[in-house]
Length: 327
Image (tube, rainbow, N blue to C red; front, side):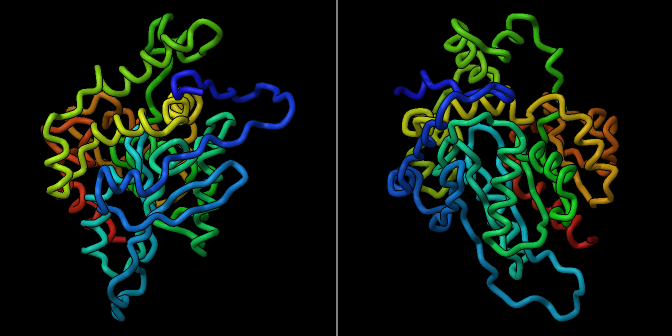
């Protein structure tokens, strides 16, 4: 089965017989051979939905004795398309500034080294992954850093499980786009159906990419210098991860990338301390969007768009450090 022919079931659809087995992710050795060892060696969760990869940046120093409230557990949740490695520069920077914290990055379903479950990709599926990971780590709560779709997932997880979220940083969060902003043809692609899936996949990938995916010609040299070249990672996944494209389509349709205003409002009202960070030129989310759902602590990084989390790591890390120090 090619990765462009897989169509995942939708929420509310009846399943006949046993669910197909999860679509396996590529092996770690193939990923490392292509992109190097920027991430620690993967650990794996075995769940009923499939196998998921996560990466631990362990503490490198004991906690300071003069602090009663410490940033000791941090979970990084990436966006759609680019997996955990896309947050590695930010996670590494924050880990060095908070050396007593255990920092963990996770590959969400269908990304990186994590399988694609052959089930609806609704928010509950991703919440269950985060919950299972926290149980495996022995964490009662964590400070969340979520980017784009990971920001939406963090907000909806906080609304559903506020006791698990010590604080939340939402960087360029998705979730507040309204499906009504799309035209009828585009909405038909979001609904899907027989005869539409090939066109829907092409439109969804182009919409998320902001055009055609263009991999820089010097990406191998840049990777050799220790850079994360997100376009090359996305291209690799589409070629090597059989379930990746299906997961991307499922996430945009059903995962919580749109119309999550009620859940954001619930998270904002729950008393969880939060910070939102936006690029000034971001077309996915605005200060007004966040204010409308009750999220008032918003910082704007000038002259950058939705890619702020990778393009402006020093500024983003400083904003998060300042927020955590005041925690």
